[in-house]
Length: 161
Length: 110
Image (tube, rainbow over all chains, first blue to last red; front, top):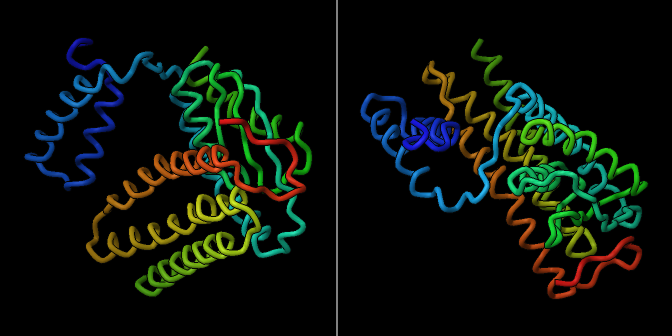
């Protein structure tokens, strides 16, 4: 079973994506099932270290928190954009990373980019620091603490122990 | 009931449209490249979100069955938008684009 389905969650995800794209029917269910088995096997070499999902309820919670933040922060950014650009306080910030898994770091960087007001610009070669550009930053320590507490800690609990 | 759904759909389209507009406005108006990057990657998430919610609601209502295809758009957008923003930022740092003088901190050498 492990040999046939190295990443069960990825397979499930692919299958559901296929069904959503093509409509729910027996034919597509079967075809999607085939793809869901074949594609992870074929892309296996692209996953040097397989991320392990350890805490599913926390993941659901994390997704909800991120969506809520996107909603509220969008309003804040809209206000900033419509206000005077001279009042903006842009900054580059270096965020020291606690996460070690590449996939978790990617998720954190994407989350930072999606939540308005911050874009992750670069990650250092040793995977220890993330460079972030902020649209309007009040206090560096506060921004770093907020990202760590709101996104990095949950991700750490979800993917590492 | 029809009126209620129509009202919800119109409201969602309006919200989506307003945020897409604000995003493009930011793109045109903000002073340097890094700041401009925030416009489209940001306000657009809610812009697209509102439009897609409207479409989902409208077609689900019209055909009296739940249609979730639109959610795939959101999913793919959420996967790809941060990557393109990241590549744009990296390219900007590589070319050492001018940034506003009062920007704190500095970009990395590429």
